Image: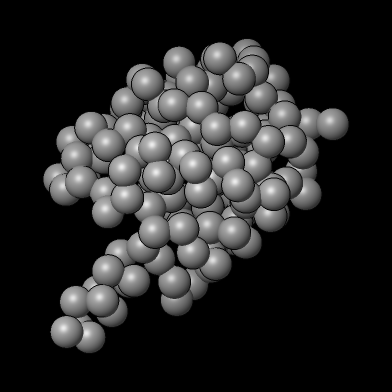
Length: 140
């Protein structure tokens, strides 16, 4: 069985997150590296709606997730990836147009040296934590 690594914020857990994790689980046992509140504040310029402990609890209850770890390296995800030693890193296809390697602080050679495959999972359009927040604001 493959070990699948993915990471993210997973704020306001929604159907898009479930579908993504389900697709990851089809590839193997899923380990989620969860971003800390501090990193999210630094990276996105605003805190998550749900706290780290709440987001971790929700992810742990998801049947598609085998384990949740802390992304303690912040922008340098190599620390978390090295702690997991996955066969696969799975990311959303929305990253296909972004520089994921730069974002995660590694390059293809780094992945190849470790025998890690990078797989893009189709992104669920029409739903996101940002969209949910916007809908909540307009319903007031």
